[in-house]
Length: 285
Image (cartoon, rainbow, N blue to C red; front, side, top):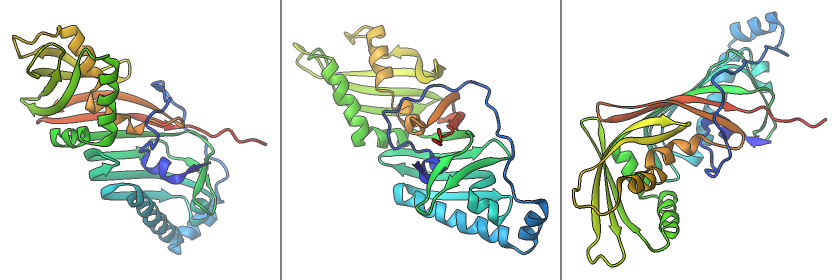
């Protein structure tokens, strides 16, 4: 059983997830157990379907705002009031603006179902059992301001702490800053290096790419001619602390498979799109 919030927002509360990249292809579930056609017709003409959709949308939005800050728009289309109550619905779409989820900031995102039939069993506490896989598409728009706020969060600072420990005293990252200019990322890091008196500041210019399902920095250039760390070593560190990959991984969850398809920088905004499939529960007899 899972809380319905995980389906509806897929802000995977457990970031250390084991989700892998889903295949490009996925199967939409076959329509089943729908109420008869005349019942659906009556539900529509009497307004019961419309009322059920509005009530469900309000409940969903209320649950989302318990866990995240921002402006949200929820759209839910059902077959009938009875089908909606049973967890069978046509489509779901969630839009968010200026979102903050536990220190991860996103300016805009859209998450919506792909198939025309979706089936989830709900209990009275809004826990859910996923009867069939639920494929969804998503896209994000993230600014450098979003990423700098995320880099100040406790979760990201823990990432920096971990890499400093892995450095075994060789390097210590003291601060990070990020700017987007001319559709390129400028990443500014301050290091403390043993036997070097002053903190080392390095400015890195880079693009973005999707590689093996992850968002990576591409064409990394070190703009400091006198920086003493080799570029390959720096690239490895840079991708480990990549704040964009850290942000997008909010979609990962052990109950979902994520595939990032595209990433680009347009008008100095980072755009990411892909698919996420909420996996069918194994129902024990």
